[in-house]
Image 1 (cartoon, rainbow, N blue to C red):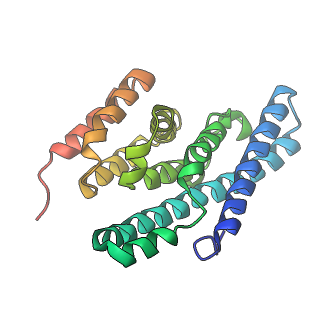
Image 2: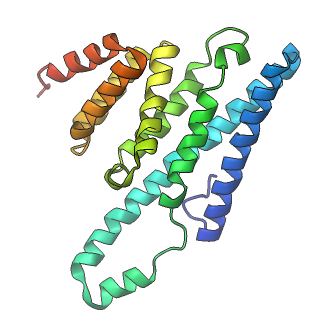
Length: 224
């Protein structure tokens, strides 16, 4: 994963497949353990496996989105130049397309968040660092204009849930409000999507307090 950006297209595709398979297997193991009331020791072992799987998965999405955004930015000048340079850039197109994996990657990550994490954590709250990995992955996609432009409705809903569940279910509302405001203020393409996120928070999670906090923060005058 450390060399994901510098590896070849075949290696990148293989890495994505392995990470997706890893978190899928971990989620299945967690569901099975919870259904049979596994021992505390078994649940603790699965908890550590889940932490590792989510860490890898979140960082995969963040790295892949960063690389995809850089590739999109690089393609714009080449396309504008046209002629031989533009044709050369087009012919050099990589066979690895993160867009082909994005929706499945986000969906698999969401599946792990929708587990009964309180039970896996011994009826406690999951680690704050773990919850941050979910929102960070969603934010990486949201920061990429082309990703949002091409996003299907199921992908958009999954992104909203990756932000909403840690905030509403696990008490990360202050951190979520700060992140949402920062995203909207620093990325010109995001204000038009804010209403959809706010509607999701209200209709699906009844998160009126979080929505109010975001609105209040956005109405404050910017520091100069």
